[in-house]
Image (cartoon, rainbow, N blue to C red):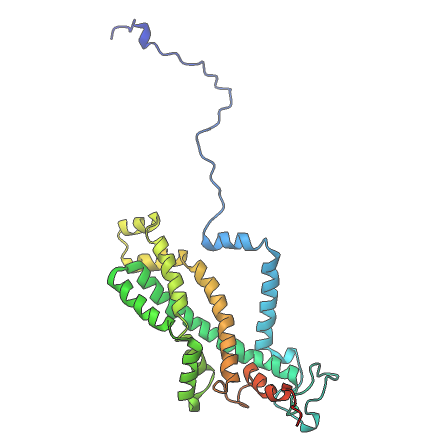
Length: 284
């Protein structure tokens, strides 16, 4: 080929020395640590002292519920009328009830009942809310319309009032499972709304589109990609539901439609029995 004599087509190359160190400046620096929703959450909360304080209190309550004998040696069902409304003494730091029962022992043993009802109710709320909210938010259209209207019906019913009616009808079958169902089956609507909103936010994401493009069906996409990235608000709602369920059980027992006494030791039953004791005496 003829030599190129046009000066405009000449190319100048800087001299290259093989002993000179060269670096790949265009290669992006990627973090080698694994990342994900749960991993990132753990890295964040483990730096907060409030997390460890909360976990300590939670473990303390769970231990008291599972092993109440570690915290008191008194029998909560052993009552002595000679000790009626007696004050604190050695081994009985909170005194005695009107029937002569140890108040501290009944509080410790009542933890198991209240925590059991709270956990079962919260699990029921979580399962129903997750199923209804995820299906409504992911599939949309008429499915969303129907499930949302069902949720509106349950949301408009005060769940404590509904639980009172259920427990009144099932008065002869009152136990931990019945009262948990009475609370949980009417309290799932708010959690379903929260999850539906989160699924609607995540559904247009690129990883959901990529999952569909790879041939995954809608149910597998929902289970493998959408739900794991939508659980953060549900965890927060579940913690609030646990506290609300424990309070609801105490309210039902206080109203006399909760767990029967003396078969079950309940905080609500003890509060109801102490109401007459704490009431001020009227002068005649």
